[in-house]
Amino acid sequence: MLPPLPGAAPSLAPFVPSASKLSDVLTGIDEFLWGPWLLIPLLLGTGVVLTVRLRGLQLRMLGPALRFALLTREDGDEAAGAEGDISHYQALTTALAATVGVGNIVGVATAIHLGGPGALLWMWVTAVFGMASKYSEAFLAVRFRTTDARGQQSGGPQYYLQRAVGGAGGRALSVFFACAAVLASFGIGSMTQSNAVAAQLRASFGWDPVVVGIVLAVAVGSVLLGGIEAIGRVTAGFVPMMILFYVGGCLCILAVNITAVPHALGLVFAGAFTGRGAVGGLAGSTFLMAIQYGVARGIFSNESGMGSAAIAAAAAKTHHPARQGLVSMTQTFIDTIIVVTCTGLVILSTGTWAQGDPATMTGQAFTHGLPGQWGHYIVSVAIVFLASSTILGWAYYGERCVERLVGVHGVLPYRMLFTVVVFIGTVTELKDVWTFADIANGLMAVPNLIGMLALSGLIARETRAYLAQDPDLRRRGDSFSSVPQEEEPQEGRDAVR
Image (cartoon, rainbow, N blue to C red; front, side):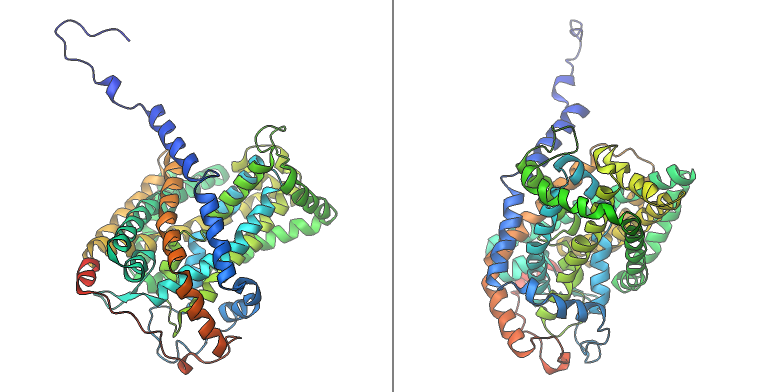
């Protein structure tokens, strides 16, 4: 660079960060947050602590929880007039809508590509302990939920951190979580998802991203105007259908390649402890890399411990926090143990894990595993609908946190801005948005994990008391009264309304 001419104003260039420097800074923050010394041990450690204190609740209650979540549509809670805005099933599908998305298709491929086949086993380990975290945050969300100015139930870490932890520390954790969640809703919840939809439709069918953006923004905006009731109805209708559609395609491929499945499982268990990676023995070639990418991508996929799904759980009609906690717990099982496992085994059994770009690896596996172009179309449709459902789920998370920060009058402007950002995502090159979204997700998790550890005694005590009366979740909800809500100080009500 030439020096400035004599008498000329000094250049500000040295003081203005370049795009590359900003990218480096974001990457550094992301690697620190999701590295082996902060969020990974904190998330996994919290799950272990909660598993011990809840006496392995996620394993011994999984069967009753799945039956209650998926088969018991009239559980007595709705019929008995329990507080809440949507059914426990709609709360589950809303949370599934936000988690079962692009991460279950591309995220799994990235974990295997960088961490080797063994990363899949560490994703399973993360899911098992994550189920205890998911139960706990949903329990707290219902236990400490409040009623907003419109008469709707509001809850989640942005409320229970203040109401349960209390004091200045609880208030600070609550505000910190709410701010991080709003930022995350514009990143992982909006722009990255709509961009994936537009890119997939352009690659598969040659559709113009501008047209895709307009249609998607109008559709999302129309649903958001109906609030959580409309979101619950939409997600209850098409989220299970899309999961079955995608998992059905995976099962067809595994049936065709059934002889390769034992070898794929062997790669998983051997690679979990040897760290054999896909990139020529370099990236992902160590044991620690297999753990790091397996745990990080597993948590990214099911969001256990991040607190986001607890926001949807708080809207459920239920007479006891434990009932909805057990329903929410099944979300992690469905997301990781079922959907992620299917994706991982398809990639490994078709042999595409050792070649190609992780962004297209799952599509290549489907194309290779099914005749003609059917596999390609299945992945295209799955990405479009699952990404769209993620947008709806995160829009609700964001608006609940906006309400916590500025009150109900901020919800409509947020919905309008969120809809605009959905369109922007379809026509913009994201570059560092994914990294920013990872950082926002990590920042959400920190205050929530601190709160769950502090409240683990309360969670365990009240859970044991409830399950002693209803060990199989077969009693009607009207047999129990709601857990008494702690009265919130007047200053707290003023702050959140």
